[in-house]
Length: 249
Image (cartoon, rainbow, N blue to C red; front, side, top):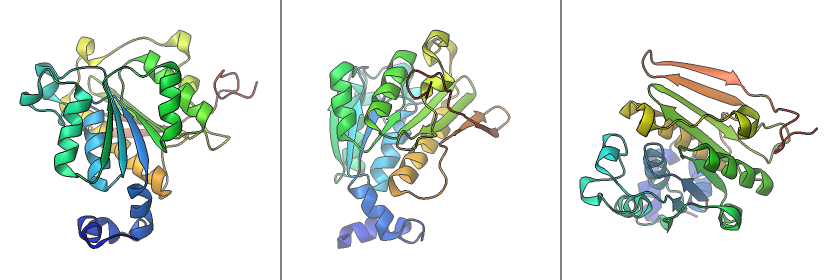
């Protein structure tokens, strides 16, 4: 049951029949892990908080730098030198103090990563390195947790949803086998600032849809974004039978 303050705060969601009080209630009781509080994690964390997700776990071992402010909109000039997870938590608190925030100012690995993933309802991958992406993919599939994945570099972005609760869903390693990963990131290749906002906002939308079980998600599809031409393409992603994470062979 939503209280009077929540009825007012989330009234624009409650007007949507696909969401209504039932969907909003799902978000209020949900817990989401956001890994990476940079260009993608900034809009993800902001929109999940303002939408009313009850608990956010924020993980990032980096500190805010001046060059981040070009695109990482959750951070401010005053926060330079601060851990990104803590900086993000402060902004979320000012926007929605009812969202409970837990921060980890370290890289999540091994048993610690598995323990945290086991305690949340959904994970959003906003990282920029293949090692962490593969680790998150493995943990989510082992523990049957939905994973919303996004990436952005130069003028190109992509978003998809992996949901190991469904037998037919592919995983990140189906698309990027470990031995085929080529490391690229914004610090070496550059990135168009609004692009990470577009990708991160779509990630937040997909996370909310999965949590409330509404609409059609990007599970089994990769949304490709070209910000130079502002064209979007949706490509089907089949499960790879020989994948060591989710394959059947």
